[in-house]
Length: 145
Ligand SMILES: [Fe+2]
Image (tube, rainbow, N blue to C red; front, side):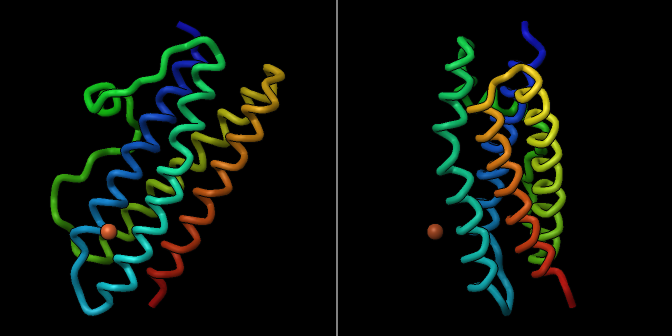
């Protein structure tokens, strides 16, 4: 299979896993600043979910099928699942690391899309990189003492 298409599928599955994790933290966070973190995680997962459909359709535009099952997402994702209930700051740190990983994934794919002359797709990937940079900024700022 085309390596680029496979990397796009990995990025797609990874952002789905990322959104599920942000929603997990939205639901399960506790502590004195519960409401602030509960809202922040919601803002993040809503932004990522809103891009899922366009991402899937971009894979279809390349004549490939999009992964669309929990099994496939789990098999492909570069973002690890979280099955434990973490402390609030650990949730923020973990999602920050994942945001930085997602930025890097989008950055690499952007360049590949540019090299292939897929400019609609590279625009989309640039926007996704920027969105994860914004999520990382919010999370990093929350960790500051
Ligand atoms: Fe909610």
